[in-house]
Length: 206
Image (cartoon, rainbow, N blue to C red; front, side, top):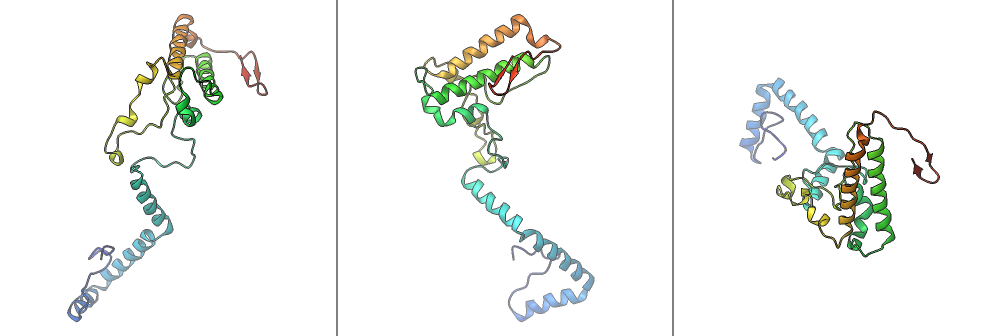
């Protein structure tokens, strides 16, 4: 009964002779309309009971259980989150200033190198890197029905960069010094750039 829309793709009848007779009468009175409803029902069945539709409904149930309704779907696991999340998320408990986790140090170094590269060759264009200026860890989840329009996950956690006991403050300081250098030497105002050295083996560019 939930599948049939009366008058559009069929008629609903009760399991008794009178109701069944009424349905037959409706069909026989306007056979062209009955044929039209049959075609609608066929298209609807092919659409609603296809494996693609079943998979989408199943996915919707899982997204609902994970509180992810309305979130964009992605096939690539590296799409949709910041570079800092990619490199530092597994080590988020080792972000204290005195910690010397090699993976954390490498991740922060790569973020700094990307900032330098952007600042060096962007010219007068606008280039951004995914994430905050201090390497905030965590996927951005904008307010939507699935999370009750909660904006906490979309908030920039500036308190991380203000904590001198965390490495986030070091990256924020690097960003501030880089911006000051850009303002002083006006790199971004240069009409062009020149690559003096590029070595794929050593991963160097100058």
